[in-house]
Image 1 (cartoon, helix red, strand yellow):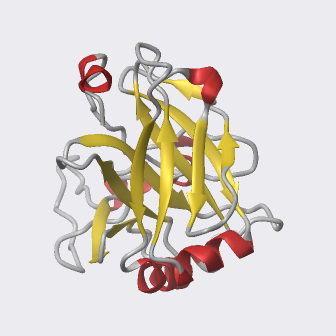
Image 2: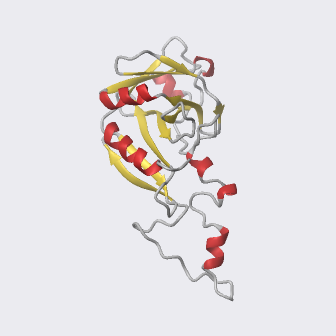
Image 3: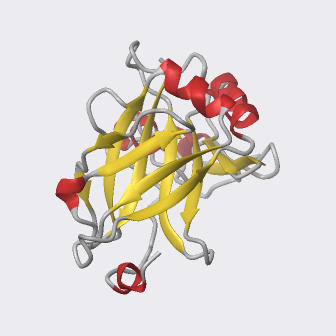
Length: 219
């Protein structure tokens, strides 16, 4: 990876994704209109835990001290992390994620996989790239020996630029059977030197099976 790409932006990676199309992000599934944001008690929960004085009497925490509405690390599977939001129900909104690094171990980008209600897709995915990425070139991704696809960026926030897209069933199958993939970004300051990073698929099969089990019944 070229030093010029590292110089143009701090690789501060957002953990939440905006809504795009029918794909549902973690923050969309646990939103204020649905009863509170992650890490904040719902109003009904507050009322139940308050006495006549208005003072909270506390909330019993289960599953290692995780309250309803809080996000927690469900597990690590190879190079993939599974993060969920506690709902108190069998189905939970979860995401799979992996930090993408260069050959020196420096952070370049992040990929996240999340559930979607689109019947034509197996899952939604997002790549979070650093500010200073050349947006018209999009994100290019290939799995194993499969074709290279380009996905457009949809938005930038204060920390990163985000490309959000859908994964087809055969693409998820390729991720389960393959050893690695590749993601390519282009820096605005170095348009002639695309940055290729390895997408590790170590642990993906087991991680995705757990992801599917936990998110089944969300929609």
